[in-house]
Image (cartoon, rainbow, N blue to C red; front, side):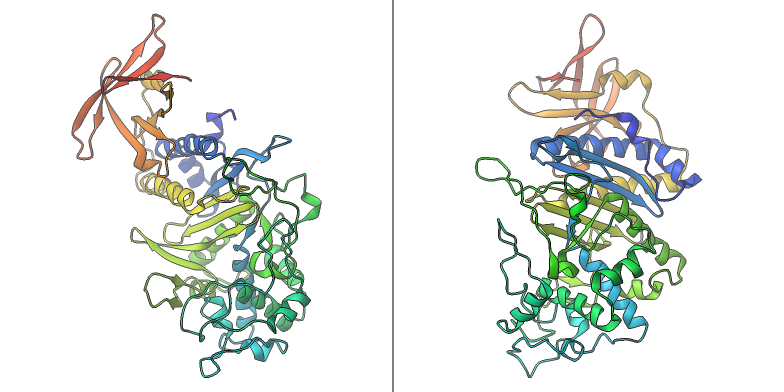
Length: 482
């Protein structure tokens, strides 16, 4: 897929762009990171043989960068874009949990209410009757002791036979609890499916109708749906593909509907809609108020409400809440037949990363973390010292490009912090795979060490026309290919 540097400057907006967002997009420090991310993802799609990827970065109220890579459908070569629709699977749980909390705030339920008191047909065998009640709070924190799934093989192809509401209810009589409530974390699609049933029971509306009216419509999430939309198959909906098989191939995942499991895993969305969803949260946390949800309630949901006995698993009310490098992240990941997605937000930084792919077996966390770790320092620097970012010296532009060894191994020379850096590809960590260079004269550079000292020479060889043809390092060449 042809890469267009110009699209790094063009941003897709949630709302008309303000001065601050425009200056962020134009800051050389931010531009260099967005350039890095595009180069990185273009290579990763090729090396990992990903069908397609759509990705975006939100800073407060603005989607400052979004891009598609590869194909939404391989056979027709329909490109992946920020407007491509993907199943977001378990990110659905956030919409369900917000719905529950809306009803809690209206006084229509209490988080400590027993699920059985709300749903009269909830008759799962409780193997620990002396334990705490299976409450609404427990299902939102995955500490209810319920089994992971409803009693149906819906994750198994080729049918992917997701049960209807009636089948979920009927299946409960064959199931029993795994642990006492409030004993262990046990991720449970069954639990969040029941949360959706609670929404329908308490509100008196069908679950999908409630979510559309009370969350999707107010937030203008026009491309988000509580079920996989048949009308978008072959259009904006990405075709789902399996994980790679032993022979390296992927198979097309047959069409399916998530039906009764929709509150836990049924939603579809786009990068642009999830960006609006993230921006709403940053707005609510920053400005306060009661837009769709009380700001205090959103803060409550994004605090830790469950810590497993191993002190490694933490969860909010519906939200995954985690710490990494002394930063708190909230959000959720999703994995369904044919799709993997990730919404990762840093409330303190007001930065969100959205990653969506139509290929199973992909480490979404690796890509979300890699993008955040690259962009966050650049955003902080641009906000702290606007106008001080250094653009690349035009004399060094001729060295920028992709370099390869004949039998494997690829590097990309790119602008970085006013100079040049070499990115080794493929990479699970783009900023960790950068080698910074100091220009010491003509076509000669030296590696900048971690302590800012200088290491070996990196020499670019030019032909008679002054075009760069090779890069030499440690007495070995890599060849310029573009």
